Length: 121
Image (tube, rainbow, N blue to C red; front, top):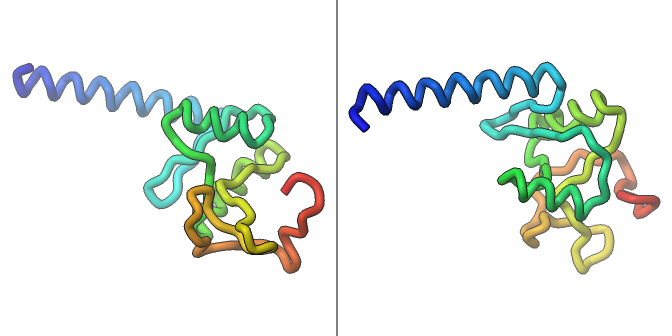
């Protein structure tokens, strides 16, 4: 494509993306933090289904790496009055946690004595 045509195509795509983001923001299904986009479909699911849906959308399950990203996840917890799965698992050492890929956590914001292993954490 000629530069002008390419510019027009890019402009149209940017406009379409902007409109889609606007709709998702109106429905409280998208928020951003630190250059990342956090999104939900608003449906309840088990962990494996959530993991699968995130991958199908081209992303990954939310993993807060700082207070701002934690707040982005809490946005959905509060708006949908539900819990959120995180991309964190217990390591081979009890009560020690890691990212799903096995790397060490560098940020947590848990209450004292949490996670406690009670219920679905």
